[in-house]
Amino acid sequence: MPATQQVSVIGAGLAGLAAATHLAEAGVGVRVLERAEAPGGRVRTDHVDGFRLDRGFQVLLPAYPEFRRLVRPARLGLRGFTRGALVRDDGGMRLLAGPWHGPRAVQDVARFVREHPGDVLALARLALRDAVLPASALRRAPEHTVGHDLRERCGTETVETLLRPFVAGVFLDPGLGTSARLFHLIWRSFVLGGAAVPELGMQALPQLLADRLPPGTVETGQEVAGLGEHEVRLTSGETVSADAVVVATDGTTAARLLPDIEPPAWHAVTTWYYRTERPPLSAPTLALDGTGDLPLNSLVNSQAAPTYAPQGTSLVQASVPGIADSAGSLEPAVRERLAVLYDTDTRDWGLLATYPIEHALPVLGPDTPLSRPVRVRRGRYVCGDHRDTPSIQGALVSGRRAAQAVLADLGRR
Ligand SMILES: Cc1cc2nc3c(=O)[nH]c(=O)nc-3n(C[C@H](O)[C@H](O)[C@H](O)COP(=O)(O)OP(=O)(O)OC[C@H]3O[C@@H](n4cnc5c(N)ncnc54)[C@H](O)[C@@H]3O)c2cc1C
Picture 1 (cartoon, rainbow, N blue to C red):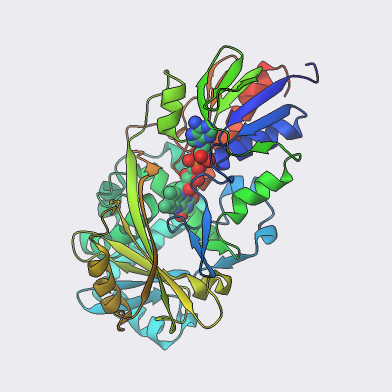
Picture 2: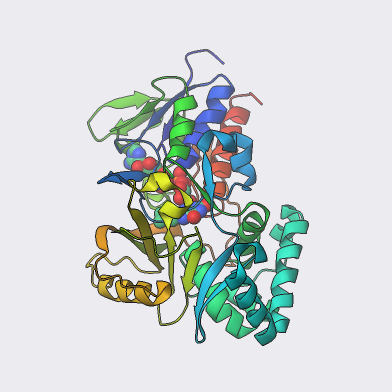
């Protein structure tokens, strides 16, 4: 291949950055055209009054195989969460975590075991099965919705109080219609490595990938309007010639640029960030509230990563999956639920920001394969979490698959 051959990657989210990484490593010339002012796509971190606010609460699972393939976790200064959760049910709040988390955990777990012995066994079996079986076996297991699958394995009550708010928080799907295979793959990563955030905020991950590319590879402020046979047309009127194009945008934009691609349906979420002088919880434990119509999850982010808040203050997030509350009408109810969840007065908590996100995660139900084609035809490729699993892992894998398809067509392996 002549040295002048160029691949244009459209979008500097995780998928585009992964694709560019593999292409650059293979010695191919790459330009990444990104419409925003910084790389990261859906993984961005805002700085507000000294707080780090991820654009919608999200976490990195250090056991994601594709993350480990691309990044040395130590480079990100990962801060882990408690392996367990604070769960609200009719009996109040329970801390379901290992005994090393103190007498409250011991007492609450013992009570849960007494009340739901069968469910506890089922949960332990579930964790063991998903940790031990190879991922390839989980990908081939009989397919259902996650709601159906979990009700079969654990009791309905445990699903409603514990698993529904957790699963809804992970897939932003309160109806639990997500693919059970996808659930088991992601749950496997939770069991094997827990959840964490980089100390500088979630955007540290895409920033690390962008910084490793040859200088000038990522061009921000470049919005692509359309594709020609051997060129990319920018909204500025400029054209960029390209021997191959990888469309690494979100699925909706990809379907506009590539008529062969079906646009995905989306799950929504709203995250509220609060500042308070006193942390309502001393540990980085996810609090889950499955009572009421809309499940809610919350975390004192600064207990996981103190760098998320200025000294002497705490950052608390609350997220309600399934809804993008652009009108801001849910906030008073969320604040009240947080007061019950943490058993504290939340009236003086300062609202720092609200992130209503309509297009947060592509829907992946049991009828959709976990992996979809990334090669449209010679010279045209597509990647993004809508091609694999809707997750950081899926976005990174799709980027690698697209790069491999480009390299194969260019005669490089
Ligand atoms: C609130 C929220 C919580 C989440 N929680 C988790 C979690 O806890 N764990 C997990 O694993 N995953 C989570 N995810 C999912 C994960 O963030 C995404 O799956 C992943 O970031 C998608 O990456 P992507 O590269 O496929 O797409 P995107 O991040 O959407 O990147 C697409 C890029 O293309 C650019 N672009 C779009 N159109 C154009 C154009 N015309 N021209 C040029 N550039 C364009 C965009 O600006 C963007 O940078 C969450 C997502 C959200 C939103």
